Structure formats: structure tokens, C-alpha cells
Length: 253
Picture 1 (cartoon, rainbow, N blue to C red):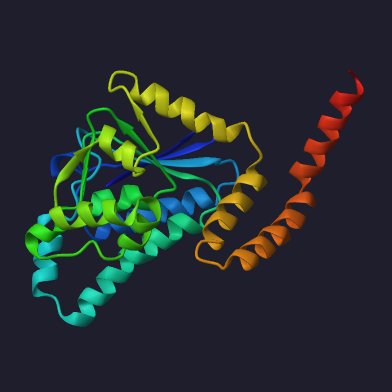
Picture 2 (cartoon, rainbow, N blue to C red; picture 1 turned 135 degrees about the vertical axis):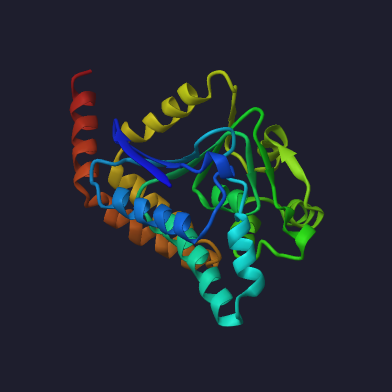
């Protein structure tokens, strides 16, 4: 259900259930986590991109998953919910950027998966939405991430009306980082991702960790945490070599 490849230091995780609009189920979520672990263990990988095969990114939970929810016990539902929670947490813990490349629809859990990624790139005809309220459900875990991405009122509107929004509006409210033309989407995404191969991997790892670590910290504590990471960054090989290169270049002018 997953197609995994690494090319030019970019790991690609493709949700490969096009006949089901790449709908999520227990097995697919497990494979996404396994693929993320595989990429995290590969030192050559500088970024990870998650996309969907066929016309859509991910349509949310599939029929069998919804049927399982409907008849599961509270403990079973709790275990199932924590599996998705673990996926969202893992995306933030991985040292490299995790990027969602969204074509077509990203709905419900699929929109949650995209939102949980560090960055979201969308084709101009992509659609996003949290329609859970239509069936009495709640996008509960991803709400913690969504609320950090967009304003409170935008988040409230998005999750309580259950409507789909287009890529342009998703970009306007901060749910999406960039919108690319459908015709050049793959090329634009590849170009965007390659930037991560041109900068310091240790710097990216430290920056990603710090960004999420300071979220919610009091101002002074956030500054102190930043100071600690600043010191760590100075001692890395990348920083030492970068400074030497900069000084050497300056001395030749």
C-alpha cells in the first residue's frame, strides 16, 4: 500500500491505494510509520515527501475503518486513536522536513495527515477539508496542530462547517505553504525539496526540533532553550566547516 523510493537524497512515500482514493486504514497507517522510520534511519535522506497515487492525496478513513470504529469497544477505539496520534508525533520527531505534496482531495484524516506534516505543497486544483462533523465525528488530535497553523476563528470555521476549501484559500489562511500549477506540480515540488539538500542537515534537524520545542513555552524559557541550541549548533561539524569556508572566502577578497 506504500511505494517507497529515495532519489537525490529525497525519500518519497506514496500512498498507493488509488482505487480507494488512498483512504486510511490500520494497515496503511502502519506502513506510513514504517516508511518514516526507514527514511529516518537513512543518513543520506535530507527530506521526506508524502503524496498520493492517482487523482487524490487521501480521502480519510476507508469504509472498513469506519465500520470498525462503529462496532469497536472504548478500549479498541482508544488504541486505534493512539495509532494516529503516534504517526503525528513521529512526523514532528523526525530530524528532516516531512512535506505533504497534495494533488486532488485531502479530506478528514487525509487533511489531518497533510496538516501534520512540517510543510504542505498543493496543486492549484487541490481541495482540503474536515467533514467529520457530518457524521458526528471530531478531528480531535489534529486540532492541536491545526490550531498552531491557523487562527482560532479560521480553525473553528474549518472544523465546524465541514466544507471543502480550495488550495488558494488554504494558502491564504496558512494551511498550505505553496500552491503550484497542476501542469508543473511535480517539477515545482522536486525543485522545492532539493533546497533541503543544499543546506546544513544538522542545522535543519536542530531548527526543526527547536521550533516545536519552544511552542507554548514562556518567553524567557523559550529564549534560554534557544541559547542552549545555539551553543550546540556552534559545536557541530557543519557549523565549524561553514564558518571556516566563510572566513576563507572573505580573506580572499
